Amino acid sequence: MKYELIKNGVVVNIINWDGEAELNLDGELVLADNQAYALIKNGVVVNIINWDGEAELNLDGELVLADDSAWIGGTYNGSFVARPVEPEPEPTPEQAQKAADKASANAKLKSLGLTDAEIEAITQ
Image (cartoon, rainbow, N blue to C red; front, side):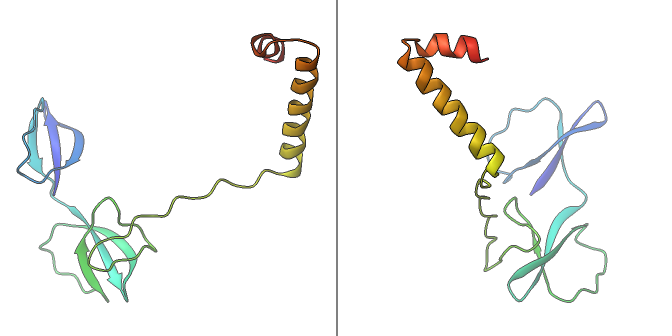
């Protein structure tokens, strides 16, 4: 469940807490009024909304309390499937050429007897 950490009347943090683990916090912990809920349709998260859990809603789909793994477009099969890690983008031809030129220059400097530290000092 999401809780707000309140210090001097101001929300300073929002944390997920199971209600059982011991916490050592500087402030008052209050259950957040609105929770994030995922709207699920055919096993896919189609929206995430904040809802107090009581107001009447007329939605097309199943409403499930969201966790940190919930994301719009994500899968729900009894639990949320975390977003996949995005692959590193391929370098542009210009970036690839620049890297090749740098590697070539470093190799030439090493062949002249310069150390890695000396090469770094003159190429920074």
